[in-house]
Length: 139
Image 1 (spheres, rainbow, N blue to C red):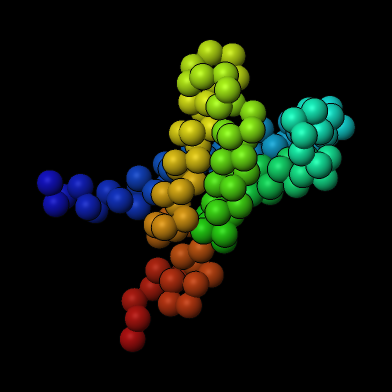
Image 2 (cartoon, one colour; image 1 turned 90 degrees about the vertical axis):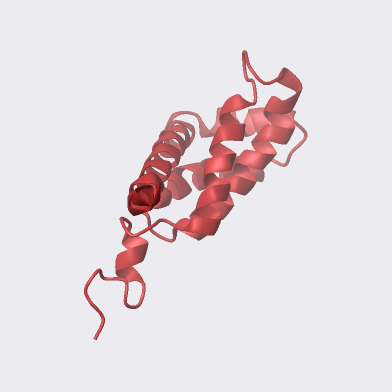
Protein backbone atom coordinates (compact mmCIF):
# COMPACT_ATOMS: atom_id res chain seq x y z
CA UNK A 1 0.00 0.00 0.00
CA UNK A 2 3.03 2.30 -0.10
CA UNK A 3 1.99 3.39 -3.60
CA UNK A 4 -0.94 5.24 -2.02
CA UNK A 5 1.54 7.52 -0.22
CA UNK A 6 2.18 9.23 -3.55
CA UNK A 7 -1.50 10.23 -3.65
CA UNK A 8 -1.47 12.06 -0.30
CA UNK A 9 -1.21 15.48 -2.01
CA UNK A 10 -4.39 14.65 -3.92
CA UNK A 11 -6.11 13.68 -0.65
CA UNK A 12 -5.18 17.01 0.94
CA UNK A 13 -6.41 18.83 -2.17
CA UNK A 14 -9.78 17.07 -1.97
CA UNK A 15 -10.04 17.86 1.76
CA UNK A 16 -9.27 21.53 1.09
CA UNK A 17 -11.65 21.83 -1.84
CA UNK A 18 -14.53 20.18 0.02
CA UNK A 19 -14.14 22.23 3.20
CA UNK A 20 -13.34 25.47 1.39
CA UNK A 21 -16.19 25.25 -1.11
CA UNK A 22 -18.85 24.43 1.47
CA UNK A 23 -17.80 27.16 3.91
CA UNK A 24 -17.10 29.79 1.25
CA UNK A 25 -20.62 29.38 -0.15
CA UNK A 26 -22.12 29.17 3.34
CA UNK A 27 -20.30 32.36 4.37
CA UNK A 28 -21.15 34.11 1.10
CA UNK A 29 -24.83 33.50 1.75
CA UNK A 30 -24.51 35.01 5.23
CA UNK A 31 -22.37 38.00 4.23
CA UNK A 32 -24.26 39.02 1.08
CA UNK A 33 -27.69 37.57 1.69
CA UNK A 34 -28.70 38.09 5.28
CA UNK A 35 -26.05 39.30 7.68
CA UNK A 36 -28.58 40.99 9.95
CA UNK A 37 -30.81 37.90 9.98
CA UNK A 38 -27.77 35.82 10.96
CA UNK A 39 -26.96 38.34 13.70
CA UNK A 40 -30.52 38.03 15.03
CA UNK A 41 -30.21 34.24 15.07
CA UNK A 42 -26.90 34.35 16.91
CA UNK A 43 -28.25 36.85 19.44
CA UNK A 44 -31.25 34.57 20.09
CA UNK A 45 -28.75 31.85 21.11
CA UNK A 46 -27.40 34.11 23.87
CA UNK A 47 -24.21 35.00 22.02
CA UNK A 48 -23.16 38.60 21.34
CA UNK A 49 -24.31 40.02 18.00
CA UNK A 50 -20.73 40.82 16.99
CA UNK A 51 -19.93 37.11 17.00
CA UNK A 52 -22.38 36.69 14.11
CA UNK A 53 -20.33 39.03 11.97
CA UNK A 54 -17.17 37.26 13.06
CA UNK A 55 -18.55 33.83 12.15
CA UNK A 56 -19.94 34.98 8.78
CA UNK A 57 -16.68 36.56 7.69
CA UNK A 58 -14.66 33.65 9.09
CA UNK A 59 -16.66 31.23 6.95
CA UNK A 60 -16.48 33.47 3.87
CA UNK A 61 -12.82 34.54 4.00
CA UNK A 62 -11.55 31.40 5.75
CA UNK A 63 -13.38 29.21 3.26
CA UNK A 64 -11.78 31.10 0.37
CA UNK A 65 -8.33 30.84 1.95
CA UNK A 66 -8.68 27.09 2.49
CA UNK A 67 -10.03 26.70 -1.04
CA UNK A 68 -6.94 28.44 -2.43
CA UNK A 69 -4.57 26.80 0.03
CA UNK A 70 -3.37 30.16 1.31
CA UNK A 71 -2.48 30.34 5.02
CA UNK A 72 -4.30 27.02 5.24
CA UNK A 73 -3.42 26.12 8.83
CA UNK A 74 -4.47 29.51 10.23
CA UNK A 75 -7.70 29.55 8.22
CA UNK A 76 -8.47 25.94 9.15
CA UNK A 77 -7.95 26.76 12.84
CA UNK A 78 -10.37 29.71 12.63
CA UNK A 79 -12.90 27.53 10.79
CA UNK A 80 -12.49 24.74 13.35
CA UNK A 81 -13.33 27.17 16.17
CA UNK A 82 -16.31 28.52 14.20
CA UNK A 83 -17.62 25.02 13.48
CA UNK A 84 -17.06 23.87 17.06
CA UNK A 85 -19.18 26.74 18.37
CA UNK A 86 -21.87 26.00 15.78
CA UNK A 87 -21.77 22.33 16.76
CA UNK A 88 -22.07 23.03 20.49
CA UNK A 89 -24.48 25.99 20.50
CA UNK A 90 -26.69 25.42 17.44
CA UNK A 91 -26.74 21.80 16.32
CA UNK A 92 -25.93 19.50 19.25
CA UNK A 93 -29.39 19.60 20.84
CA UNK A 94 -30.99 18.63 17.49
CA UNK A 95 -29.34 15.23 17.35
CA UNK A 96 -27.01 13.87 14.72
CA UNK A 97 -29.34 13.72 11.73
CA UNK A 98 -32.43 15.60 10.69
CA UNK A 99 -33.28 19.27 10.60
CA UNK A 100 -30.22 21.23 11.82
CA UNK A 101 -28.51 18.04 12.95
CA UNK A 102 -24.84 18.11 13.83
CA UNK A 103 -23.55 15.68 11.20
CA UNK A 104 -22.42 18.41 8.76
CA UNK A 105 -20.66 20.70 11.28
CA UNK A 106 -19.01 17.63 12.81
CA UNK A 107 -17.70 16.40 9.45
CA UNK A 108 -16.53 19.86 8.41
CA UNK A 109 -14.84 20.41 11.79
CA UNK A 110 -13.01 17.09 11.34
CA UNK A 111 -11.75 18.23 7.91
CA UNK A 112 -10.61 21.55 9.38
CA UNK A 113 -8.90 19.75 12.27
CA UNK A 114 -6.97 17.56 9.83
CA UNK A 115 -5.85 20.56 7.79
CA UNK A 116 -4.56 22.31 10.92
CA UNK A 117 -2.02 19.52 11.36
CA UNK A 118 -1.32 18.48 7.75
CA UNK A 119 -1.47 21.88 6.06
CA UNK A 120 -2.61 22.47 2.51
CA UNK A 121 -0.16 20.10 0.88
CA UNK A 122 2.00 20.64 -2.18
CA UNK A 123 -0.97 21.55 -4.43
CA UNK A 124 -1.62 24.84 -2.63
CA UNK A 125 -0.49 28.45 -2.67
CA UNK A 126 1.11 27.83 0.72
CA UNK A 127 3.60 25.55 -1.00
CA UNK A 128 4.49 28.28 -3.50
CA UNK A 129 4.82 31.11 -0.97
CA UNK A 130 6.82 29.08 1.58
CA UNK A 131 10.61 29.41 1.42
CA UNK A 132 11.86 26.64 -0.86
CA UNK A 133 8.29 25.59 -1.59
CA UNK A 134 8.14 26.69 -5.21
CA UNK A 135 8.33 23.14 -6.47
CA UNK A 136 11.76 23.57 -8.00
CA UNK A 137 14.75 21.47 -7.07
CA UNK A 138 16.86 22.83 -4.24
CA UNK A 139 20.54 23.40 -4.91
